[in-house]
Image 1 (spheres, rainbow over the protein chains, first blue to last red):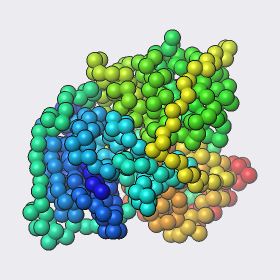
Image 2 (image 1 turned 60 degrees about the horizontal axis):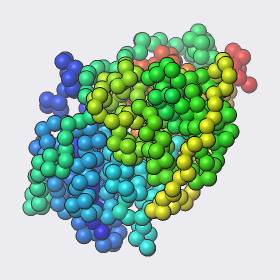
Image 3 (image 1 turned 180 degrees about the vertical axis):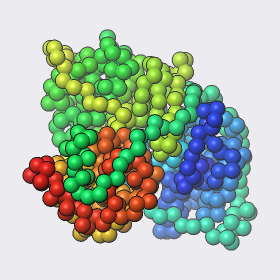
Length: 249
Length: 322
């Protein structure tokens, strides 16, 4: 089995993101970045499939981004991916562009399984996995919290849905997107970082895979509207009175 | 002929609150009204509800069979055929909407915008990124394709009942083709006596400070008295005190009740993201420095194990609930 794991470099989840004074983006200078956490979970799942004894010929990680995305690809290699591919572009891309590039890539590399995060924690778009599955014409299982490979080679996936847990079985090739509870990713070990330097990391212009102009313009980045300052009350009765006053009891 | 199509979602044979919210968003796009497509075994009953909602121009009804349970690979191709008649297709940003709509966007070469919070003009929208810490204004280029939108539930009111005659129903949704590559095994539905978290007017939520699943049950009495849904922070879910579908926050549900009571929740950014559109946020926490107090309208510092029972009694004295 060949597994393709698309990953994204994002601002670290612990950073308090601020908008730039010119409102054309967010402050990125001196800000910690890393693998999108949901993509890290997807990669961890790919590693566990191999470690569970399923024959996995190759785990390929791919990122569409600037040269700086090499950093997250090196991390992915240190975590255990076999090879990495940077589809390099100077422009930030929206999910539609990324999915189009990935569609061209799956034609070329023919993975059996694409495992990726359910969303990136920067744009919170939650689109790329299902977009890719749609363009590819293959089954999808999004927001997966449990994944099992069946004896006949199909996948059994449990999805987190609004009213509980839904289970599907899908034929391969398929696209699976990882939810938070799928697993807890391992930490990178120092010797693995050294070893990862020997692993192949290729760079190809993303345009070669059909990346074009985005269909959406990002006009303005602004802080969200703020809430008015609240009050502290001394006890339960005052709490109830304050809620009554605000018309919610 | 309407330019906007809203895809209805049903739960237990009724239209969801989210469907009405998507209709409110559709009205902001085009006050002239939107068509509502209703698919699946609940369609007949849901269509009756749908044609009485304000802003619905027509209800397009599908065959009863083949759409249940809803699978993205089955719904998206049918919706793609319907979408050909419209400039924009909308669906609530529920778990179903998030699954189906990107696939639909792929099939119609459309432009997808996730979780629309505000409509500026028919191609320009506002949405939240970075876990709600940034509000982004985006414009779909005019030459780009059809709009495929999910509607942020916390940002829109539910469309109400209409004044005049019910909207006409047309039965022209094509049969589903089916998807041999996907087999539905089942849904393990979390049942609760409490109202649905996503649409409840009042929510009582617990955090890690509850300390155990048994202690978490302490909140049920309070929730019952308030007629509130139960919610939980990610920390409480991760610790196993509450099931994941109660999770409120960036990685759980984003909600906008009239009243949100956070009990023993510190107020991590990712949690606050899920509640900041609540009309009134109230917080109970023993740490006066907890970030939750920065966004709470009403705060009470103290031990939740004393305060929660006291609060139930205070509500009783004030004649709230029974």
